[in-house]
Image 1: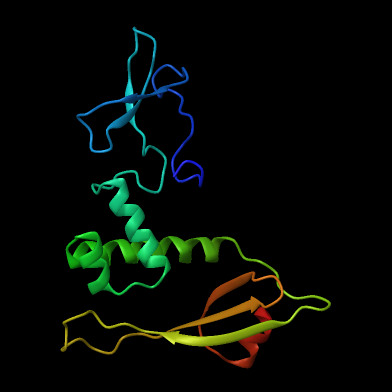
Image 2: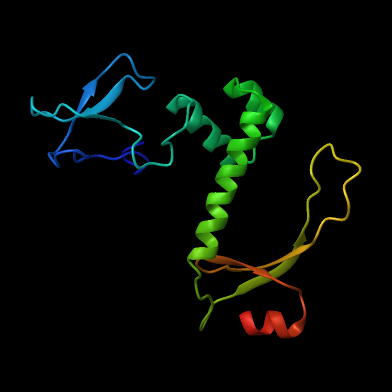
Length: 172
């Protein structure tokens, strides 16, 4: 996880600023903490501090398994069985990871194309009724426009109010 920058490789003490050391600590779920070495401080923080996993109550192995199955489009039933979690936990984590990717895509737009590049574009509508609520009213539609540069693999996604030529041409 550290090699792939999912967990910090170093940590400074939030109390005194000293460089912390990793210590075995059986009382925490991960079995390891960051510990401040000076005897006057001895502050301790989770190895998850500042990471994607901070605040999660599942073991790191299960979180990594969830991320793997989400990335390969595993079904909820398969993930529930393989990772040994409740369906709601799988749903919540899949939604969280999707939201993180959406935020990143919307926050970091890229410019695609150029001489010798092929760019594929498409638009789709996204609408979702609340599961199990058959009596819900109409769900507002949200149009999404995206493009991928076939040459480089770079892509972007934009939320758009409609799929009119004026709207999409401005983005293109």
